[in-house]
Length: 138
Figure 1: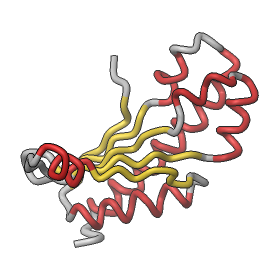
Figure 2: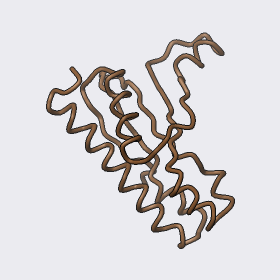
Figure 3: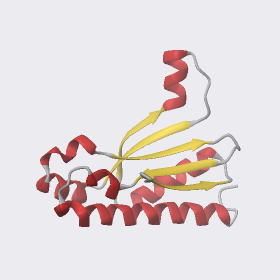
Figure 4: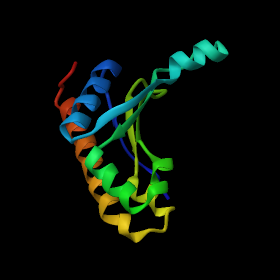
């Protein structure tokens, strides 16, 4: 079972991160949190790692709909999208699969919302992949 929707691109980290942030906004998501894992691990553990960011994304109308149906859903929000450098020097963009995430609630009334979010995440990753496949951002 996979729990993410993922794409990998050969591009500069900052360009990919900017593209992901822009596409999240274009799909109605705000970024509620932005965790710089590389900086945190360096500061807290004095460990050197590749660049790694966790973006906590939220689409307010969809979040409201989900929370109205299932108040404890807030424990699973926001939906995380990660951007990181892999060992090959490529940049990976990976979003949580909302269908898998809300599946643990066993509330079928959330299925349509999860499907909507998944579709938007798939669109975001597709746009990012297409942008850099055509040489954009380099």
